[in-house]
Image (cartoon, rainbow, N blue to C red; front, side, top):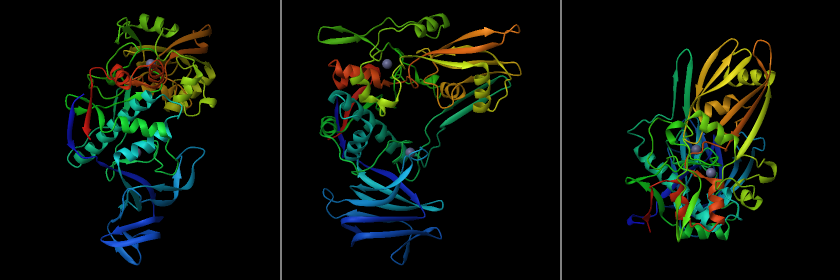
Length: 453
Ligand SMILES: [Zn+2]
Ligand SMILES: [Zn+2]
């Protein structure tokens, strides 16, 4: 681990409320342009500017007089956007409050120290029953992601980056989607970025301990902060970046088995990874249940990573989905807008290193089309999202014309399988692996660097 200490702890700008009128209460004394202000405030969008206390502004910044003790409350914050439980609540924050104008509304932006932000985010994302080493690993991943966003935001004015792409011919439609970034602040407070509720809910001791122990630490590779992707369960082998998103491989997001062999004090990755890009190997892999860190049904471990553990299924290391012909053809039509007629076959065309399909040929009575990459496949074959695109297909009850009456999809893993496998990492934490061993197992050849003290 190298020590650079070349910068101070940065601040992050978090966009929280987007409304024509925003109400908030400064619970301690704040300063606006050198003037002391506290108590209940209302700001209103007015002809492209901000109306506050009878005057118009282009931007407002409320800075705490005493940062360690200061807090303010935003009223009517929408939480669970687009979920069935969407509702409004008052939320409390540390740090400064910025009001900016965007399109036809105002945006309330919380300007807060990175370590305070991370304490809040990890507390609401992770279960308090998680092991300290798992929480430390997550703290480093969240910090890496956040600082990469802040850096990107500094570059964004000069550069345009592609966040999705689509190549389409008569018989092929290959698409991938990546997260769109924000331009006027670093991250939003919703699931689109990381769910952030300020200090509305108390942080837990073990999370504060994990943040303190890893303060300033990020994953790096070639002098840059890593793109530290993660998903729920890899299915036993890691997927590589280019099979899910842009066709530019990352050296630290590489194939490997999700298991290690102990060698005295240390451990090495198990080298016995089959070539899952070969159909016969992938078929055998998916239909069996090889040993891996994420091959677990331990309720104590699963409840650390799954938010609504009680409501969710736990058979995602290997899973199975059944469709009748009627269900599948109606589903694909609804989800893709393409009328394939009756579905004759689902043919694997190309797989990545975890066995996930990144090209699948859908053969219909009216139309045949090859689709990809993994998210497009998962969206097309499920009313929401199929667990993963690592699956094989069994056809049953063929008609005289060769049209199946029923399909079984047998699959492996949950999510894209690139980078850290959350279930596997939780198991590693329980088995006594340290957070740096966990991180360097999933981000191959990366470094853990402390970039501020
Ligand atoms: Zn966002
Ligand atoms: Zn795994």
